[in-house]
Amino acid sequence: MSEKRHVRPYGDTTGDGMVQMSFTLPVPHGPRAEGAAQQLANKMGMDPAMVVHSNPIGADFTFVVVYGSVQHIIDLDAVQVVEREYPLLTPSDINATVKKRLRRKMTVVGACIGTDAHTVGIDAILNIKGFAGEKGLEYYRELRVINLGAQVTVPELVKRARAEKADAVLISQVVTQRDAHIHNTQEMSAAFREAMGERRPLLVAGGPRFDPLMAGELGVDRVFGRGTTPGEVASFLVHAMNERKVAV
Image 1 (cartoon, rainbow, N blue to C red):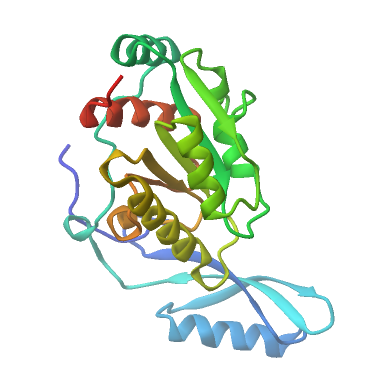
Image 2: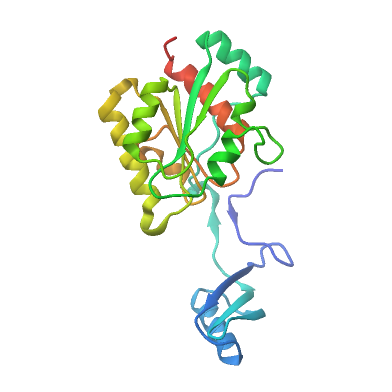
């Protein structure tokens, strides 16, 4: 069966365009809030739109779930995403490749930069406990992992990466008010280029608000979004190491 090029959302029947969305309005719970939610959904192209759930959030706010049909059609040929161009390797394959290629351990430095104090993302990738049933990078015998934790300044990160002779630097950004994740990552990549030039380590950024298509704009080698597993990151590091022909 050939893949369809033009698609619409699927709810009850194929192509009916049914979607569900939720949002909060700064309106006290009641008929007025539900009416406002329905009007908003209509303006967004949902017709008909039905409020299927509403709930007060304190005295002045209402959480609403709206269900309805949209007429929009998606052209899959126009969808731009980052496809994984490297194979997912097992930990044993990654260890063997690093040992053969580098003849030493690969050094990976990770941190949350700026004022971000949320280490859940970087810990999920680096700590041995891992994420989604996969062990973190500390589990890999041929990877030497240094987790600097939270609120690390860019100068501190560059200094430590140089001191550790890092092969890769992983940064996580969860707090993203006013696009802080973009500004911090661009500052970080610029600092590494200025300090180390072409001999800089691999730079990898990750977080729930990152768009993987932004790697070039951010000045990093890879961007990972939400749901990324340690195995994906480790496999990329090996792939990128081979592509860059890292010196031993």
